[in-house]
Image (cartoon, rainbow over all chains, first blue to last red; front, top):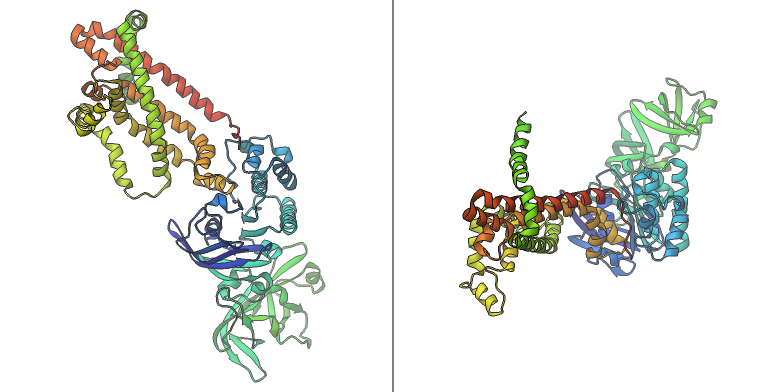
Length: 355
Length: 255
C-alpha cells in the first residue's frame, strides 16, 4: 500500500498541500494532472527525495516519512530518464540491481538487451526511457513510481511497455503509482486514480468511480469530460433535477452522489448553481426526433467534425450551448453527417452527473 | 586589437623571463642545490596544501552547492576574505594565530608541532590563500551536476555518501580537477603570507626574492625562470588529463 496522509511539501516556490490518497497493495494507481500540478513533487515525497514538512507517508505498514530513500524499497523512473552519463547503458541497468540475474531479466523485459553496451548519450529518447525503466526494475522494488515514463516511446512500443509493466505489476504484486497527463493512459492502467491540480489532490478513489462522478467541474475538465455545462438546478415534480443553462434544460437524476477522496460520499445540492457533466460518448445522434427512453433530446446543428479513423468528434450547437459527441466513423457515413446539418442529440438523465 | 595587446602584456614579460633565464634555470635545477631544495619543498608543500584543500573543501563545496544552509552568506564572506586581504597581512594574521606567543601556537609547540618557520607553516599559508579558490571551483562544478542524478542513485540503494562518490564525483571531476590545478598553481606562486609565517625553509618564490635582494636581477633570473617552468609543466599535464577525462565514459565501480 502507498498512502499519503495530509502531506505537505515545499519545493522552491511550489507547495504540495494536504495531499491524501491510497493505492492499495498490489494495485496500479494513477495520478492525473496538468504540467506544474505537483505530480513529480508528490512522487519524490513518496520516494524520500523530498521530506514533507507535514503529514505522513506510509509504504506497506511502515511509516517512512523520514526514512532515507535507499531504505524504502522504492523504484523511481523520471520522465527525463536521468541515466548516468558517465556509465554505459549496461552499467546503468546494473547500478542498483538486486543481482546480475535481476539486471538481465529487467533488460529482457524492457527489450534493451541489445543496447547494454552503448554509451547512453547515443540512445534515442525512447531507448533512454526503457533503459531507465530497466534500471528501476532491476532493483526488484516493492513499490514502483513512474513519472510520465512512456512519453518518449513510439505508439507501438508505448502500448507494449504499458502491457509489460501492467503484467509485471500483477504477477509480482508490485504497488505502482504512475503519473501522467494523458487521461486515456490513466483510464487504461489505473485501478485507482487521483486528480492533482495546483498542488492539491482534488479527488481520489477507484478509477470507475472517479471517472463516473467527478467531484467538481475542474476535476471533470482534468479527466477530459467534454461537456461541462454551468446552470441552475431545481427539483421537478417527477423526482428529477432540471438544470437550466441558457435556452437549454437538462434533466438529471436527483439522488446523484459523488465521491471525495478526503470527505467520503456526500450528497450534491440539487438546487442553485451547479454543473452538469455529460461524457461525449453518452450522447446519441439521430437524423429525426424519434421517441426513446432518453430524457434529454435536443435539436442541434453540427459545427465541426473532427478527423479520426474509428471515432469522430462531432461539435454541436444546441440553442447557443456547445456540446461535443463522439460517434463511430461509420455512424458519420450512415447518418450522412456534415457541418451545418441539423440532427437530434439525445442522452439519458442517468448519463448526467451533477457537480 | 585591445585583446591582443592585453594578451601580449600578460604573456610577454613571462616569455621574456623564460627566454632570458630558462636555460640557466634548467641548468640550475641540476647544479644549484639550494634551488633544487626550494623547488622540492615548494612541490611538496603545494601538493600537501592542495590535497588538504580538496579533502576539507569538497564536503563544504557540496554543502554550499546542494543545501540551503543557515549562515551561507557568512561562509561566503569567510571564503572571500583571504582573496581580498593583502597576502602579507594574511601572513601576519597567521603569525598572530600560530606564533609561539599565541595560545594555539604555544600549545602546538608544547606538543612538538612547530608552525612558524616550518614546512607546516608553509602549508598553512598556502591553504589560507589558495583553498577558497578550490571551494569556489568545486562548488560550481557540483552545482552543475543535476541533483536528481543523486536522487535517482538514492532510490537505487545508495547512501548519500555513496551516491556522491559514484555519481556526483565522476560527473563533477573535470571541474574539481580544474579547481585543484588552480589551487596548486596559486599555492606554488604564493609569497606574501609565506615570507611572514615561514621564511625558512625557503620555497622557490622566497628564494627568488632572496636572490634578487642579495644578487640583483642577474642572480634572481635563473630561479624565477625555473619557477615559471616548474609551475607550467604540471598545469599543462593536468589540463590535458582533465580534457581526456571528460571524453571517456567511466565504468561503474564495484557495487
